Image (cartoon, rainbow, N blue to C red; front, side):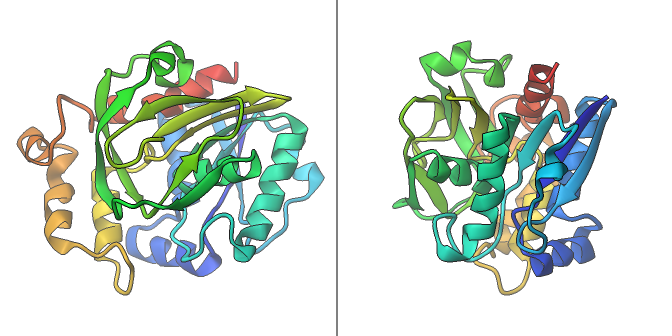
Length: 260
């Protein structure tokens, strides 16, 4: 049995909006994705924007996941202080941590890196032509990944300067830091700018949500079927079988194996 704590990066209102649209919150979706890769996984969710993390919340936890987020502020903003405080406590405990998108940016800031809005604009739908670095080819996070791959994504901000002692694992033309690891001074962090826990259809739903910066209904229609339609996936720039569940969730499976 693996006990995972998931820190919800969204506000309560955004999490509930997701539940109303698709039946689960982003944190619940992440938990189900982990369980699909390892049936021994159990998880609990804490939303630091609503409930401060307590030290005993970390007792008997094997690993911690940091979700993405749709809040309008960046992870270095004053509004994100509750989330930064929670993750700092996690790092102080020395637990293995996996972060997606906002979660990777959050870790980067806490560990001494810098983030900002991408000069290339938003990367929405799919992160294409992601390349493993030489270090990424050797690192267990990206074990069995193709040297060039694609994964669902949706982000405005990106990591623009790695923390010292971080290892760059993957990059693409849009965001030069697509994955990194930090394994030093008691911190065990692996992170991705993209979302292996999301289906393409989940991202399509985000792109239809009213009043968001992600709206792009034309692209959403193509993403709706890309998970199961190879022709549609290829038309979006996907090589091979990257959107099939086993390939898409490679990083989740590798991180869970890391907890053994």
